[in-house]
Length: 185
Image (cartoon, rainbow, N blue to C red; front, side, top):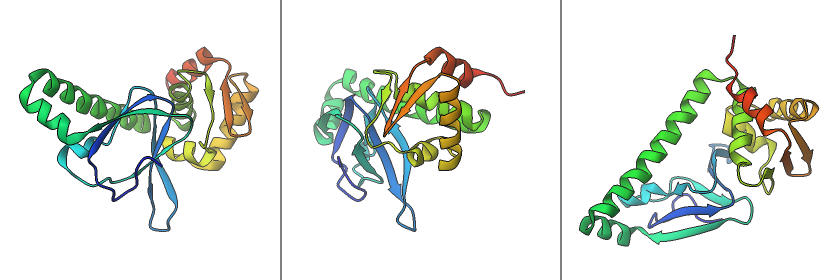
């Protein structure tokens, strides 16, 4: 666990490798995955405003992160326009990611969203493993665990991937990409 909801948000984190699941607890204390961050993404931008963490962050595999004290970053941004621009890029890239996720929810069906998510999760090694469950994938794409399990089986039957215990191996990324980008008719 990298941090928990309610912890002081006093560091920025950049994910150098691996995957980190961001989640919250529902009213019934069920974990609801907000997203799975992968290499290059920044976590905890809320710390720039001095807030407390509004979600939990858990490494799903052997993740490597760079942890930077927010106070030092803000101080450097006040003194160096280059650092301020960099922070602006971090925040705008997160906004762009949220807009992309919103567009996917509106314009793509569940199979397309799942294919897109699998491509994102497996873009580095083609192997998606660790603690990521079918339920986590369902939360990520706005669906149910049963639907995700069914679709993963269909993707396997099409030769797009191989399924193992807590492991998905992408076999045909181009096939998944075609599925993710096909237009609904």
